[in-house]
Length: 468
Image 1: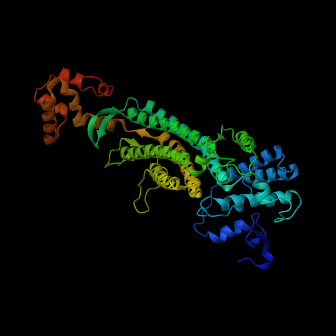
Image 2 (image 1 turned 90 degrees about the horizontal axis):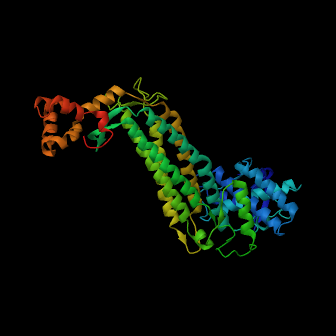
Image 3 (image 1 turned 90 degrees about the vertical axis):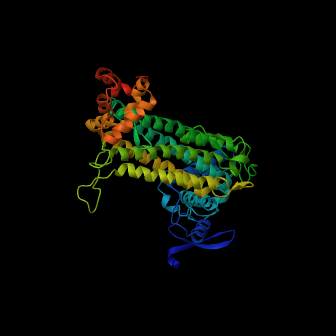
């Protein structure tokens, strides 16, 4: 509880509220703090930055349109810049689990920017006669168009600045291993059972291709978010916004971000539905699925060191057990598994939230904002760590890889065109029963001459495809 000396009294349309003296936020934010003591989780800095960016763009548009007095407008611009730079992030105190439109966070931004602008004009916090959070900072806006705009701006920026570069780093690391391991012949495995030989380089080429496809998906996710509902105000009609406001504000958003946002073709769709966010999340989920597959394969290939496959060695980064001395675990791939699981879960939540666009508004936007940005953040960080701390340091146990390939029962597949499928199956079964290699059985049974068999069972040649 704040004491008499620690608070000031501010008012809103519902009456007076005690606000901490140190706070830049005001009455409506304080009410939200008291109403939603839910999780302690706040919207991330990227989102708050985007909110401030929208407020800055709006102020400049309104100054240009003659709607906002230049002195007040420039103070709002300066205050919004401070928020964008992160110096006032501690003033954004509203829980993620709040009013579904995000009104509390929008008013948090309006109040912080207004009170900081008041200070810049020489006034005291709470003096709404100088700068009003609704009349001036929120001019030509509604939470209903500002909040989804901030989701799109923050997510598109994060994908471009964080996720795509991290995926490119990972793809390059995998491509380097594709080249390095091109001559490492190993047993292929399907259903976790012996299959025809492949090279380790071929396995890694699949991983690098997955990530290259993932980069395209990330680019598509970013581009999916480039439509903005800004200017739609409360329900999409644009009530209380100047007809040229959206065009000018979005032009400023583009100048500040370097991206190519445009006004939504249909503001009603853009505000009622969150299909763009659902689509972007689905693309992120696909990237997560690729990372899950790659991480699991690395764990299998690295399993051992004496009782598993042990075909590759993953760099040791930390002790693996509090009780088993000398144990080292594949901790980076495991962390990537956790990341992928979280992103898949986030996608489920975003899908549910996206489906709850009832009539003129989606009322699940704060969770969409948080989950979408978290997915982007952890995918980016996980991809970078996987590339730098794991993939780049992987080495191959070439001898073990070759021995597995040589003893694989499914090299018998290359014999099939010469002796027929049924006879080849008999060779495989006899090799299993007598714990012998396919080569041994064929030689002992004199099914093919040694010279011909050596030609057919050239393991490296098998990895090139074609009929033996």
